[in-house]
Image (cartoon, rainbow, N blue to C red; front, side, top):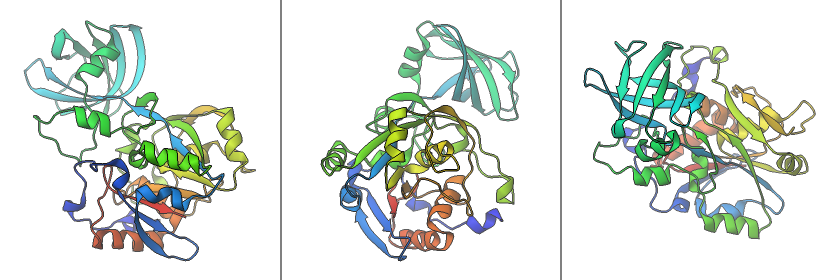
Length: 345
């Protein structure tokens, strides 16, 4: 299966640069896989499409302010994206796996300086892209990060240096996020407001939280010509006993986003039973995959040639999804993280 078959042309002006003024006012395309029908609506009306005792699976992972800007010893600026914590010798000394930009001429042992007298020391190079940095801070590292870190927005969202960090810190986060650990938002969940959650619960839709900490892999492009050769980065996930029981007794499991989908499918055995527990997943879902437990998918509009787009094509069918994307472009839907969404029934 060739990666080029999952390409499409998107006008740059359709890439959403700002969140919707109100979360639940995003446009929502509703796709019926059985009939091929496509309806255009708004996210506020999501409760109208779900039935009593449907199980809505949300990812409650919380985005950390994982991007830091520091200065090299030469005085040049360097951008750091935290990926995962490797060790914490003390509250004020913490080692992380990171991405660096620019990484040219960076050497092991180099020092990077931050505000408030904090510094980082590059201790190792893991791969061509990944490094280890030990941070030495004058305050608890989490306090340092919350004070000086910024939202790790994807590269297609542009921000001026003078832009306030506060709106993105708030809006690049779901309202139900509670488990810190992601370096990118589970964006299908960004549309939920308290009003929509309340309406779903009033209609007896069961809301089931799982956790998948979204990692570097969400930014990582597929670089192989043949889809089957791509390897996903491993990401931590967790499902409680209660939530697995709810899903195993459901007739319709609605996954909010590709992250929830991958959690559910990773935890489901060959008998289609969802197993509780925690683990890491590198599940790569592309056309030809047979879904075991997910019946309905809520998702945003994704980058061409991305693992997320391939997952949606696997769920909705490549031809139908291409038709839907053509309509979205024609009707000027907003694309990517801060964009609009589709509900695939």
